[in-house]
Length: 506
Image (cartoon, rainbow, N blue to C red):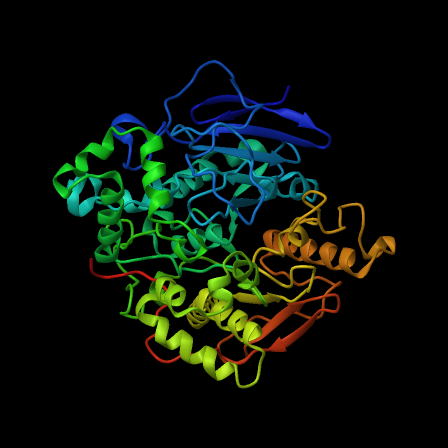
């Protein structure tokens, strides 16, 4: 069996075809006991060979519906592990892709089907997927209630990812990877989490490139907003502020039950997320209605590939009819103080579009488009090479949220549902395949090119220029791909990147 050395001890993987896989490698100590709600601690060294044949437990999470397929594995607070797929354990210094799963920051894991890295490894990339703490265990802000020791508790998930990146930097050469060419990528909540790393000083130098699929830095919130959510959480547990310390010892099941009570329904997602705590995020961004943005001086990473789907919100509207109808109550719950701006934009669009299409466009723009556009604008203005795309392929569910995942992976996930698209690695334009198969082969190849070279340009696509705020050239992915110049989103001044409702009072 293949064995690789890490800073903490040897690990034994499995050879699966042409790819060597290591699963469940601990990159931090179990965040249990006194480490609950605390920053991740370095793992304790081991002397015997660690058997990395199986995935580790997934982070505690509710059994809630999810857009993305999930791994059915045991849950445990002892979840801080990562998985590696590599073409070989030689010294070839291959590019590395560290992948952060989606799931609204409350579900998912690095063992999910769309976190499998065999296809990337077969194409010469060392692929790493990461578990990080979710929901209340990953993003509950306790600094105002439990004191300085817990000032960073609202960013445990961010700190977990940073710790995983440090592990990758220090050890990936022994797995055939190049520690100087690491791309951090993610989809949905994973993309939003990856975007926050641009403003985390401790993450500087741990990655060189970024891929953001349907997400930017929309989930960051102020300590004031985070404290409101913490108060709601304590109420759900039946605890007063003076009893907040009791959550340090409560059963995990109680915490998951409480977070579910305050986060039920699509209109309540992202109740948990990164917090501007003054420590993990000391400078560079402002929050809430104070024009939250990424300051240029914080943009220290290299090339970035960022994009959205044309109709991101369609799948959410299908799950919540109140959104499809633009019900004022649902819109207020989702957008808070900004609901009036959203409803005004919707009414204007209804003059030219059917009501359902107007709702889809407005929700897509305000939940995904604004953040991605401003993030791209800010980074390109700071001199960062930026490539933007929009996924326009209209499958059975339309060009909806995360519909691009089978195309990026160039494989189907199952035989029915959102990801049952007839594509696979053995098909492509060179095999005389269908247009959808050719599109998947091209998208996957563009991602591989970006990870390897810092540019997504490939012969199978039209020439893909860098994006700038002035030129605004974006690759549109469809059965016929093209570059288009997209107009700026028509958004009133002052609408923050944190578009989801983040109440600032009780």
